[in-house]
Length: 196
Image (cartoon, rainbow, N blue to C red; front, side, top):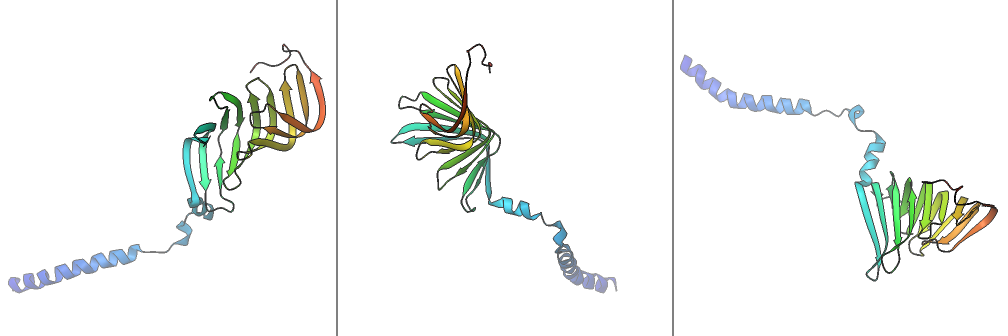
């Protein structure tokens, strides 16, 4: 009798094992929608992310600008496509001998790829090789035109004078600039200027 029971059990065991495995697989497949990630996380899949990124802009084999950011987020599927620089931005502009002509810094920026515009925001500072300094809260740099623009309040410290007003157009090397609505000028001596 034991011989027949063992023979039956040997035939049932592989089939029973397969049945148990199939039941486990089927019971593990559930569609619990509450466990899906939030919609904003799904949309974030369109973003390419990187840290400590440096871009070099060159023309005809000559370096024109170097841009560095700590946090880089690119979205090619957005309309229009853009790159966000979320944790600091520093751009150095070079002359033909690779000397730094001016430097632009800001806390955040967005680069619109198709238009070649960088919109820098929050504590934007531009300093040229002579030490002239522009301060504003928002600035647009068009890398194609090599110009910077703003419609916001500006403060320019040049030699022994501080000029302030609204709106500005300038070359990216900040050697030439024009304040659109000049509000005033304050003469100061070099000893009155704060050290940084």
